[in-house]
Amino acid sequence: MKLTGERIMGESLLQRLTASRLPRPAIQPVSQCTLLVDAGSNSSAFNDLMQSILGWMERRSGRALPGPAHDGKSFVIDDIGSQRTEAISIDTPRYWAARIDDADKNVPQRTWTTEIALAPQADGRVLFGTRLQCVSRGQFVEFDASVPSFVREVVESGRAWLDGINISAEPMLVESEDDADELCKLLWNGQRRSDVIVFSLPENSTNWADTIIPARDVARRLAGAAHVAIVSQAASFRLTDQVGKALSVYRQAVRTYRPGFDPALDEAAAHPLGLPNRIANWAGGPQAYSAFLINQTLNRTVSGGDSQRQLPPFLEAKRVAGELRRQTARIEGESDRDLLALAEQEIRDLTSSLEQIKEEQESYIVLADQEREEAQQQAEQQRQSNLFLRHRISLLESRLAQSAQPEPELPDTLDGFEVWCREHLSGSVELHSRAFQGIKKSQLDDVPLIYQSLLLLRDFYVPMRRDGGDAAKAAYDAKCMHLGIDEQPSFAGAGWGEHGDTYLVRWGKSRLLLDRHLKKGNSREERFCFRLYFTWLDEDQHVLVGWLPSHLDTRAT
Image 1 (cartoon, rainbow, N blue to C red):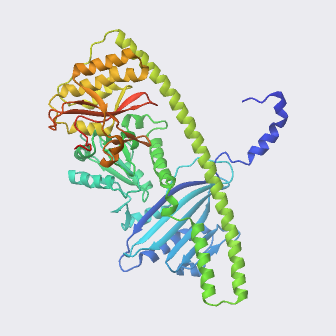
Image 2: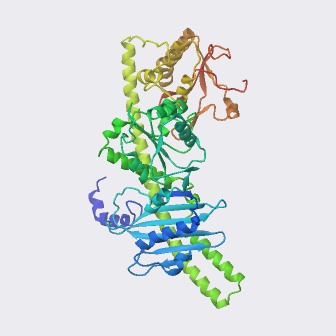
Image 3: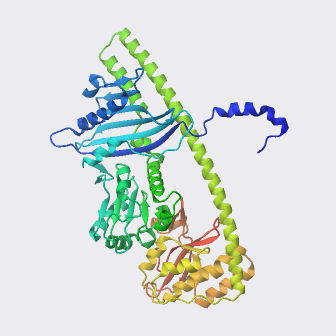
């Protein structure tokens, strides 16, 4: 908005008032890893990790660490000419946490803050976590997200576990059907917190290097933060058998399987697919797509609501350590003078910690506000685009109807069913990935009825819902009668929850109830009984089909 003549004099004041609000957050989370680490031969996993991390910190601190540091004691380095480096040690329960501020060598007023935590487990392993943050006090400069280098060293030792499996810094090679089954176990693991990025090879290729972008480089850069796998053609077929074509990956595509994967509920878009043509034509080329993929994956490691529960912030460990020191001093009967000195030091530490916490929280609020504003703008743009496209589709459909185009030929098999749906239903009827799984299991003898029911929705139900009117309703009812199909509620009603997720599908961030269904036949024999379960998406103005062509359970069954 341009300022009017009356507002020009206040422009400099407005600029001063808004200048204090950073255009981008001062503190931006970059990545987070949480691993379980085995002990090495004849050594302590806890001490091994601590000494390795201390060596890494010493190389960056600008001076040698004090002697007690290598004994696992608390320490602080904040001398002039050095980078702030500190560690907190708690004896019971054993916990060691460290933090270092590493100034960026190329961007002024930018610092990389790394937090590390170690906690021994009852089975002898060590819970090892690290969090990386970017602190920008000057102009924000874009960067590629990364994981601290010592994390990859831990992973390369062969002793690190993520989501219940032993990991390496190399991609998993999924060659056989048995390998594909193991991959599926990881995908379905309900405790999995990390993304699984699956690369596929071109048709007839047996060269693991033939991925559209270098999978090995992606695996090394995401070591400890995500799983990376390459599937052979044979393994890809097996994966498709297990998860369905809509949620599989093949022909040099790349798919990211997010945590909570459930092919019975998830839409394909919930687990992003990168097609080879799109990657090849990505702005900046395949290398830029690789950076995009890595940035998106690492961003998800710090965006979850429980990220701080998995790895408590260093300042929280510092606060707990201070409380324990005070309790120990009282128990050991320290003098009043010593207790006063300890209390004064704790107040100074607490004040400093509170200031840092306040700074971080304010930055996170700015980040959240900015992301919400960007998301709202994108959602509005998408909504306007969808409205325009729906209007165009409606006009084209009307013109096609007026030109008396013949109905498409109905196949007598379900081979190529997904292709047929894309060609004939787009814009009016959307099939959930779960529906394609139902088709794959179909035993229905009357195959043309499946296609006729989908055309019924496209040509009669959708226009009736979009435009309304008695004529559209009468035409729909007449077509249903002609096909011998009834449309009824799904009998889910208030009792749908009795059947778990049977009547639910995930769509975007929502879980939708398949509240309507088309039916023909009352036999319990799947060869002679047809059902199609769907719901109407009012926002998108189209039908979502969640299951066909067999029964879903009801209270009666």
